[in-house]
Each structure stands twice: as C-alpha cells, then as structure tokens.
Amino acid sequence: MSDQETSDQTPASAPGPALRPVRGAAHRAVAALAVAALAWVVRAVWHVRLAMTGQPASGPPDQGGGQHRPLTALEDSYHQVSSVGGAVTVLCALAFLSWLDRVRDNARALSGAEPRYGSFWLYLGWILPVVNLWIPRGVVADAHRSVFPDRRLPAVVNWWWALWLAGLVGGAGLIYTDSTNEVIARAYTDVLPLLAADAVIVAAAGTAALMIRTLTTAQQRRMDETALTGRPGTAP
Image: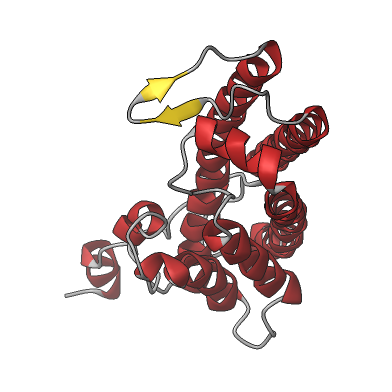
C-alpha cells in the first residue's frame, strides 16, 4: 500500500472543543452584582428607617398565635423592598452561573482536562447543605487552576468566599429562616446585626465582581494566545 493510500485512510484528528466568548457574560455578571449590591444598600436604609421610627404601640406585625396587625406604610414598603431584593438576587445568581459555566467550558478546552466537579455541582453545589460550604469555591478555583497550574489562586477568590459564607450563615443575610415581619421586628429591637449582615453581603458582591474581572482577564489572555497558535479550540 502506498504512503498516499495510508495517509488517505488515516482519520483526521478531531478538533478540540471550541472556546466560548466570556467577556460579555462577565460584564453581565458584574452589572447584576452591582444591582444586587444596590438592592441590599436600599434594604439597609429601610432597616435604619424602621429602627429610627420605632415599633408602634400596637407591637410587632406578628402578634403571635397566628394573629397579625395591619402593616404601617413603612412596613408595607419594606415588604416591597424585600421582594425586589429577592428577585434581583435570583437574577444575579443566574448571571453569575452563566459566567461560571462559560469559564468552566473554556478551562476544559484550554487545559484538555475534565473539570474536577461535574455540571451537577455547578448548580446544586450552592444549595445542598454542608457541601455548599466548599464546593462552589472549588468549582471556581478548579476552573482557574486547570488553565494556570503554575500560578497561585488569586487572593480575591478567598476573600469572596469568606464574605459569601459570612453572608450565608450570618443569620439575617442571604438565607435565613425569619419571615419578613420577623425581620421588621428585629429592626425595631436590634438593628445592628441586620446592618452588619447587609454590609457583608454588599462587600461580598463587590469582591465577587473583582474576582470575575480578575479570572476573566487571565482566561481571556490565554484565549488570545490560543487564537494565535490555533490550538486547542477555535478562537471566539
């Protein structure tokens, strides 16, 4: 058999996975974080307003035994602020996950290695008890380290995660068991823990935005280098 015939019968190597544009997703995630931070600042302002106004003589909104008194205008507006803040937080989470999904896909294409944590953990790792204390950070760290194994993980990743955990378990932050009326009662009687939780969440949003910018910039530079060499995937 001739060399030409052998060459014709040799299957061409499959192209590597395509790189996905990441800057747009990063910009959307940062913008969503900014809006979420603003929503929590507004929430903090309402906490201060409630504390300064003081609890009405009729007592807290939840009177006990399943009884509730009519809300004041300020209390009713706090319910609206809280609802808007919750909706903004959900949209922010979706934007963040969209960015992280692209970063993970690009890390797989650039490194040729499968992620340490599968897609299952990308989403459910945030809400499953106990494992949500470390897996989301692990997903972010793995995406960066697989592309840059010789570099130290940027410190901003650890700052973001520490603030996220503080907001998560702070008792009045991102996830808590109190109803909105119970939070109103707490603002009347002990507002400082609420304000501390608000500050931590705003700080977590700020560090998350800085982390997104840091990791995106590093990955984009590697993608640009890949575009020049034509490996391992197609340039965005």
